[in-house]
Image (tube, rainbow, N blue to C red; front, side, top):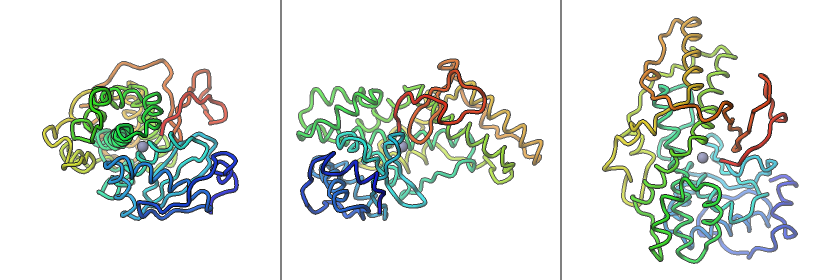
Length: 337
Ligand SMILES: [Zn+2]
């Protein structure tokens, strides 16, 4: 059962009432009766006006993922847990905001069902960059195309919200938005939104900080270098074939090497120095040679003197904070997921 706090944000007082309707997708839902009605309304809005979004939700539900609300002080809009097979949404956000988040998190569930995982430290650094960025870019592309389809069928607000928050992924869809009355998810639109994600250097840096830099720091702190081989190689073709699924197979089937593009691979100078430091510490402690894939990664100019950090779905500005950073000391700069 969800917490009382969580229930408050979906209560009639906050949201008004929702019809008692049957969910169009067979998700197992957890929470109070009112919360389930709200979840059903979100699911049905997507299922009724986006064929692509419907298919994403169906794959997540078929994969056994449950749906629930969890209040988290507004620091994270939603999440998808591979181990618990759970999609969680923060009830504090509006329905129009949660629609794209539900599509995004359900897409992560679909990725896990197709064989993706969230085991950091297993693959080479280059393979991690290719895989985890592709998972995020694809989840955003799926969300963007879902809300674009909804807009074409009269449900406009989720698109407007996403457009304001993540212009990098919605801008490449502008032509379809303006010139096609009922846009449909195509491989071209999914690929364009996917590529747009990589134009946002801030988000790439935030992901590097949380998935590479923070992970390496944690491993070194716990002296678990021997358990994190960083040696499994993945190819661009295998990754896009598993992750980038459109209405008609892989949406990059004509471009399987897309992830080898320098824009898709570049890392920040601070990520490079962390990786070099990590592998030298590892060599000292275990004798293992450094991961050679790091040397092949292009390094982009630093975005700012102080990089943002990404924690639980939000970016935090750490300027003016000393070396031992705690979340309470730093200022939230923008939401992510
Ligand atoms: Zn995500």
